[in-house]
Length: 417
Image 1: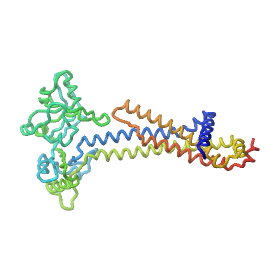
Image 2: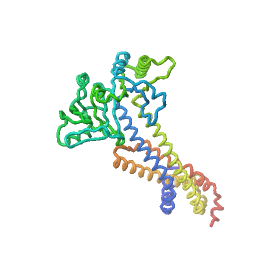
Image 3: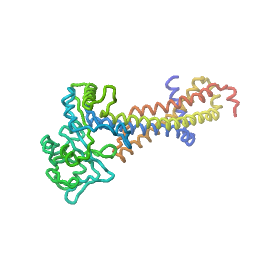
Image 4: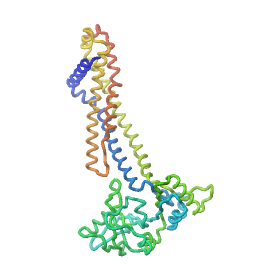
C-alpha cells in the first residue's frame, strides 16, 4: 500500500470515529483505565527506585551491619534468637584487629521508646519529645554518611575517652529548641541531664516522611553506657576497605565473630549480618507485589477495552456493509479493506493509550507535588510501553472484524439493506 492510500485510510478512520464520538469514547474507556494505571504506578515506582538507591548509598555503599537480632524483626522473637549473647563494646576493636579487609568497625547503641515517651530534650521553654537517642563512636559518621554534620563537629576520640556530656542533634530538633539562636555551645537537658550541643546534622526528614536523622540525638557511646546501663543491645557498622572485596571482608567478619563467640564448627551463626542493600531487597519485594497488582488491574482494563474495540468494529462492519461492497466493486482489494478497518481499530485504541498516558502523567505530577516524599517520575520507557500496549490491543482485537470485512462477498454487500 502506497503512502497516499495509507493517509487516505487513516483520514477515513478518523472521520468514522468523529462521527461516533460517544460510542468511541465509551469504547476506549477500558484502555484509558488500563494505561493510566500502568503509567501512574510505574512513575511512582520509578521515582521511588531512584530515591531508595540514593538512600542506600547514603547509608554507606561499603558498609554492612552486625547485630544480635535480625534487622526489621518485629513482635515476639523466637527463643533461639532471644537466648543469643549480646554483642559488646569490645567486638568492634576485635574486628578491626582480626579482619585485614576492614577499614574500621564502629559500635553503636540506640534508645528509642515512643510508647512511654521517656526521651526528651529541653532548652529554656522549648522541648522536643519522640526522639531517637544513639550512643556512637567517632567513626560512626564515616560508616554511615547519612549522619553528616552541617555545622559544628561530630563526637571525637577525646569525647569518647572522657565520656563527655556532648551531643550532636538533628536539624529538626535544632530548629525546635533554638529557633532564634545558634545552638553550638548551648547546654540543653537530655532526659534531665545537661549536654553541650557540639554539632547539628544535615537536614534529613527520613524515608516517606518517617523518622530520619532530623529526629536523632547522638552522644558518645561511653556516656550512653554510663547513663543507660540497662540497654545492652549493641550494633556494629563495619566498613570494607576500598581496595578489598566486599565478600572477602564479609567472610572475614563472619569467621572472626564465630571465633570470638565460640560458635561450633557445624553450628549456625548466633548473630546477623545485614548489607546496606537490605532496604533495596525489601523494596524490591514490595514493588514486586505492586507491579503484580497493577498488571492485574491494567490487564482487566485492557481486556475490557479490547473487547469494546472488537465490538464497535464488528458493528462498524455491519453498518458499512454497502460501503464495503461499493469499494470492492470499484477495485478495492481485500488487503485495502483489512488495512482500513485495522487502522480504525488501532486509531481507536491508540487514542485511548494517549489519553491514558496523559492521565497517568497528571497523577504522577499530582503525587509528586502533594506528597514530596514520593518522588514520582515519568519514564520514557513506560510511555513508549503504554503506546505499544494500546496499539497492540487495537491490532489484536481489531484483526477479526477487519478480516471479516475483507472477506465479505461484494455482491452480497451491494444487496444488503
